[in-house]
Image (cartoon, rainbow, N blue to C red; front, side, top):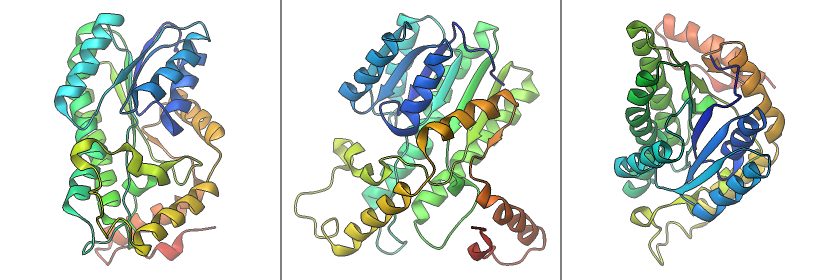
Length: 287
């Protein structure tokens, strides 16, 4: 796993705010030059400006990482500006809390394409370059504790995060089997103090909320956003959580878990699965 960041080149998606911004700044503080890709170009440039103020090189790219052509654009810009990539962080992610019967098809596709396809497309672009460099490289896929457990709500969020974790595990095993000097880790935090409740502002035009659609103006939809904001506001502080990621990478951890209150649930889940019984009761989650 990565421990020396000095002079390394980082490419990060979703780097304009929240966890992505914190990780981008943390890498820059440790000596990385950074390419920040985000659907919000001006916000990505603001972070790049912060990093340049730290004495590092930084470039912002506006991109929709749920599209393979846009991921190619990020790769091409990286090669033009830096000529290599040592660290890839796939952070871009969105959420939706609708249940199975209510969720709109556009939202299923949007969440799936950002939370899973983007990881896939970015790794397809950058892993061949990492292999050709002959240097030690690191991929960090930001997932969620929702990629390791399930609750009785938000099925599209839980299912896409599970898919992202499984993809990371497969890529990790494949790279190890082939002897490539590329490490992979997954970051699976619980609730963190971010603006994830404002996820709708990250929609590209093809997944935009139609004007006047009663579903998105309903009390039920508003309650989900309000509930999400409340639990995020009471989540773990952002900066200390990001620092734990760097500590975990230094310890060569594949699974980076920063919220210990999920540990018992994860243990019991394994027992339930081994015993071939029903999914574990979330009430086992310790406070």
